[in-house]
Amino acid sequence: MGSTPAIAEDLRARIIAAPEVILDDPDVMRALVAANEKTLGANIVDLRGIAMERLEARLDRLEDTHRSVIAAAYDNLSGTNLIHRAVLRLLDPLDFESFLANLPEDVAAVLRVDCVKLVLESAREAESAALGRLGAVVHVAPPGFVDRLTGGMQGGNAARPVTLRQGVPGSEAIYGPRAADLRSEALLRLDLGKGRLPGMLALGSEDPHQFAPGQGTDLLAFFAGVFERAMRRWLG
Image (tube, rainbow, N blue to C red; front, top):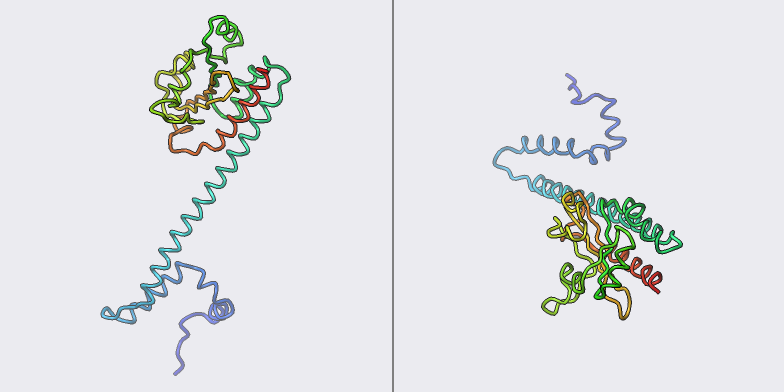
């Protein structure tokens, strides 16, 4: 009496012809291992099954890590492209007035922030009045203002080129009425050259997660470096 085949002949032939299809399917392999364990009985430990489960767990972790690395690389590339476009916007204006007017418009749009302010320190009343006439984008502050906000010259600490904060406590002096709507900010310290007080570019966002202390600052530091060099050119 002939035995009935366990599987159809055409399916059997396809498996024999391409066994890697079975090996590459984790659900099928899991079912095969489970069926094998049943034939072994409850008192038999299948070391191959245990090893396979561990390998599957490691593979899952590796796939999660791979996805995270790909996502981080994509975010970094996207951020790099964004900063490059913002730098090109800085180089477009042909005069200082256009350079300043460009900040709250094109530059802010490219950087995806809701408010841009240029902070310039001044110790002389006449100079402060002249700076104040440069436009709403400029905030004139007394000496030491930038250091207080960025942590420079406090307890012997070196000034940080970029400070990221969630929340904008006490920033009404910089952003004015817009401060009430802002939830995170990036403060970019500017070296305006020998003999000049420091400056600062403040980027405010209504998104509380756009800037946070744990984020990388290399791209913003690069943007600040380009910006301060452009400022030195205009200041002469």
